[in-house]
Structure formats: C-alpha cells, structure tokens
Amino acid sequence: MEMVQKEVVNCSGKSKRGPWLVHRINKDGRVVTRHRFPSDQERQRNCERERNRRSMARKIFSGLRAYGNYKLSKNADTIDLLKALCEEAGWHVEQDGTVYKKVSSEMAQKEDNIDLKLSLSLAS
Image (cartoon, rainbow, N blue to C red):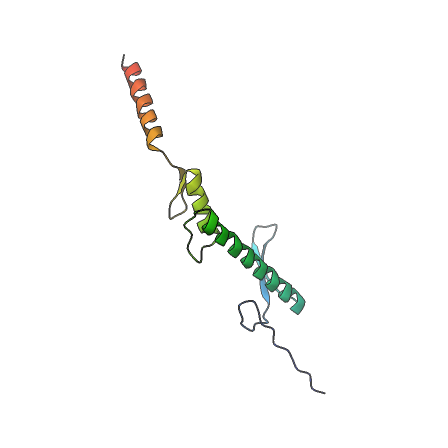
C-alpha cells in the first residue's frame, strides 16, 4: 500500500507547508524567533477565519459606499475607511498619518476676532 502525502494549499492558493515564524520579546527585551509547525487543521481554521474577515470587510465597505456616501476605492482597506471617517468628523489626515482638527472658516473668523480684541485690550 502506498502512502500518498497530500498537498496542503494555503489561503493564497500556494502550496506551502513550512513553519510559522514566531517573534517574542523575552524579559531582557531581546527578540527571540522560534519556528512553529501548525497542524493541517489549524492551518485550515486560520484560512477560514481570514476568509470570513475579508468577506465581512467587503460587506462593510460596500454598504458604506452605497449608503454612507463615502468615496472609497474598489479595493479600499481599513486605513482608507478610517481616513474617510476622520474627514467626516472634522479631522484632517495627511499622507504621512499626521492628524489635526480642521478649522472651518467661521471658527477662523472667531479666532481672528478674539485675537484682535485681545491685542487691542493689551495695547490700551
């Protein structure tokens, strides 16, 4: 009787059975790398979990595009979603990730008036 080794296909469609690298920080603060050999069942469950996560994200993004009037690209990810939510909430997100509060024209005029009154009161 011949033993046939079955080929495991991972989530991306490639056949890979290598170990997983696990990086941990020990008490001294050094990074320790270990090899972990998950079972076929664990790999399959991990693949299923990842598939479900992608499916849920796809549904959320399509709903936001359809009903939330968000300008999200076809292959938007969570970062794009957070940027859109920040823009709606009145925060500006720059390309490098810097976030600061948007200043509306009314707020800018009020601040200018306050600065003008303050400078006039200090001058007199």
